[in-house]
Length: 239
Image (cartoon, rainbow, N blue to C red; front, side):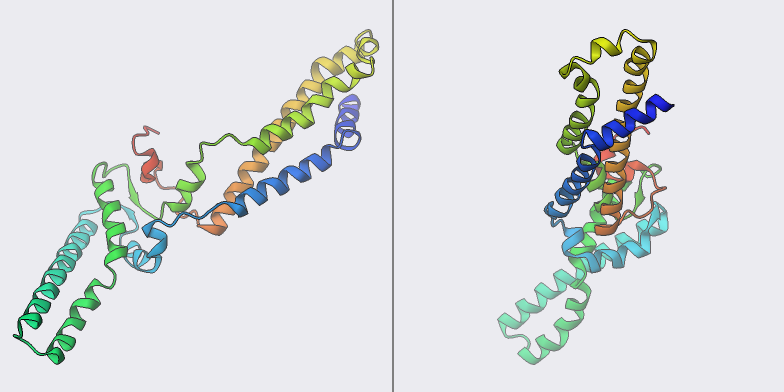
């Protein structure tokens, strides 16, 4: 343990490890804060979308399906009746005062149409796998789990931290001396390898926790116990 302690201290203090870790975290935070926000309908019409989501959140049930189907019929009828009302006005069958009075009821029904379209599209997706999918706000989860880009800051941080652990002694010709002793070989074979592995694991965990906290704060990560198939990106998953 004493040799391992010295290896850790050497990496963090003498090989700029702490500064590299700090820069890694700052770079990750900057990338997350600077990431552009998509504007899907669930974000643009968030208030209307959540109005319906609160009523159907959770696993599929026939009652929820009936509610959404009835609302779809109600909105479709309101659009048809409103178009017919305008046709009557343009043909002179009703006055402008009658138009203003009667159209208000239809417009009240259609006010939530855009948000309803979002939840109805989700409903159609859930109907393809009723036993495996749930109603929930999936935007945050999709952003968190759907990132397929290479984590460049992580790769750079691992390289900058791990390379000096093995190469610093080689550069100053100390590796030949170290490998002639029992503790020196032990340090190269075990301590350095374990240190680099733990460092890489720590960086991965730090990055994952940072992303989870960020997306939970910015978009929300609700209902974490629901099935992963609820996120459309994982609709074909068997897990």
